[in-house]
Amino acid sequence: GALSRIEEIDPHVNAYLSVDVEDAQSQARRIDEQIARGKDPGPLAGIPISIKDNISTKGQPTTAASRILDGFTPAYNATAVQRLIDSGAVILGKTNLDEFGMGGSTEYSAFTETRNPWDLSRVPGGSSGGSAAAVATGMCMAALGTDTGGSIRQPASFCGITGFKPSYGRISRHGLLAYASSLDTIGPLCRSAEDAALLMQVMAGADGMDSTASKSPVPTFSAYLEGDLSGLRFGVVEESLASEVDTEVSNAVQNATDVLKSLGADVQTVSLPFLSHVTAAYYVIAYSEASANLARYDGVRYGTRAVDAQNSSDMYAQSRAAGFGGEVKRRLMAGTYALSSGYYDAYYLKAQRVRAALTNDIKKAFAAGFDALITPVAATPAFKLGEKLHDPVLMMLGDTFTIPANLSGLPAVSLPCGKTESNLPIGFQVIGEYMKDEVVLKIGHAYQ
Ligand code: GLN
Image (cartoon, rainbow, N blue to C red; front, top):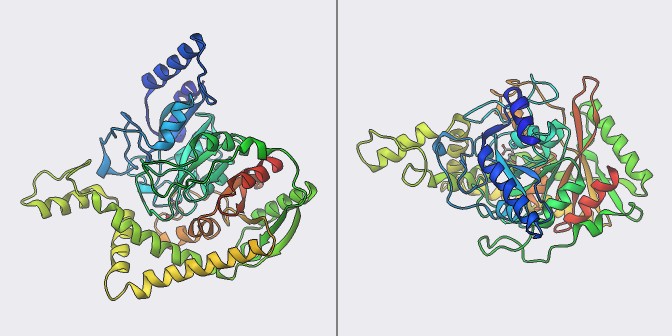
């Protein structure tokens, strides 16, 4: 089973930060007992699932891959996790990530370096790199990730699996350690769109613990999965197939669109003129929100506390200086700066205007009759460990195609669509209309 795969493979891949073997076994026994008593154990009975380590799990460590939360064990489950457990899933352990989700390679984890299972000298993507590597190697059937600017979709494409970022608000964020609250989403990384639909069915829906969780009814995802794509119109985003994209990637995406055509879809091109500005706008917004969200880690309530401070403000400063990694500090400083008086209009407000303009571009495309937009997930396949580590701007430019769905709150799936000559997976992205998550998964299932 998955536990023996972990024992065999994880020493090479480092996808997990913690695995609770005893707990997993006792969960599995509980399912067996339910079955023996004739009780329905739920739609996910016995399915081994891993959880990104920035999502709270009761009694299991939850660190967000940060030293500031070293040793922290939440007293409750995130709503998404609780709903998986209530449906019979067995939670195996917690997967590695870039500290607090801030990164695109999982190299910014404070604890360990996860490797791409297809080529151990390369990154698995990020920030949900541990979840992606664990699913790709069969060290679990599915995993939860979080996606603020692409952190489910990009690692899914680098590891050759399916990753689904739901509409903003479709899944409760209760129990997610916030990075940028207006962009954060929880979603599944798995082997197929069909599996993603199963998990969505269980996790989606209103939650009294998160006022931003949508109250709109959860559709029956499986009812949408069947059928071909006739009558659907897809717009391939022109700007996303420009010259900066690797030819192997753009060729694979072209082939995927040919497959969609053969399944009955009408495929045309569409323009998103604001695409070149989204990365700058995203980072201003994400850093700003992060600087507010991470203010809570002050050494008082959670995790690491400096021991030899002279007074309380010294204690906060020392705890934060020791607890946060370099990339997180850089972002918190930039975010605090962008929100400070005198600079707010120049940065934060301007970024919000770009966000609105992009959303307007996308709305126009949907209003013109497109049902979904198509782009590559990333301009390149998985890069080498260390290749972008000291060039944060280069790392950020890798997020251009995934960011729009976060800025506009839209559902989007990353689907494997081929390999490079050197056997690295390539993915393409389907972005759907707000709260039409089931349509996106239907397209994914038809393609697969
Ligand atoms: N790479 C992006 C960032 O660093 C996205 C991260 C994410 O989605 N959590 O912010």
